[in-house]
Length: 137
Image 1 (cartoon, rainbow, N blue to C red):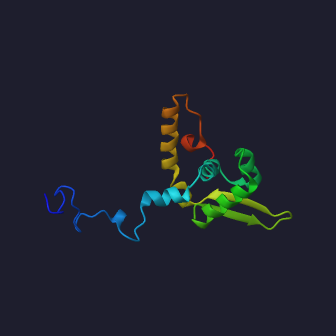
Image 2: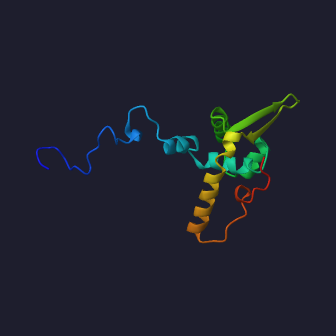
Image 3: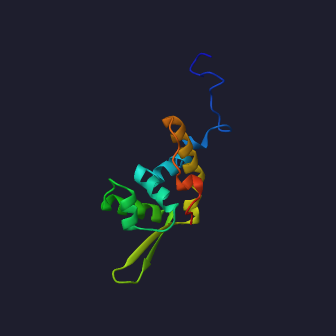
């Protein structure tokens, strides 16, 4: 076509417009990526699939993650309803983290990531608790 009308097979009409491009619409994939925005969030979830964990246990399982970074990730995951933070009135106070039902919904995604990573690395797969289901809450 000429005259600025474009190609008929690529023209978007209101009837078939992709809502992902509408103002105010949030892409579902981008939403999940934003929630799990870095390796620490995903690795925290990996550890919580083993069961309840205290801050020290998470720090031991995540070498290279600072206390400040871990605290920020835990707060973010709690704010979004992905993990629970249980504080016990003891001296010193005991705080334990666990997955919520919403947090457990991510397991199939993490299993797929584990499989893809194992395939791409072309190495023997590790026995991750996410895949084996061991220690699940």
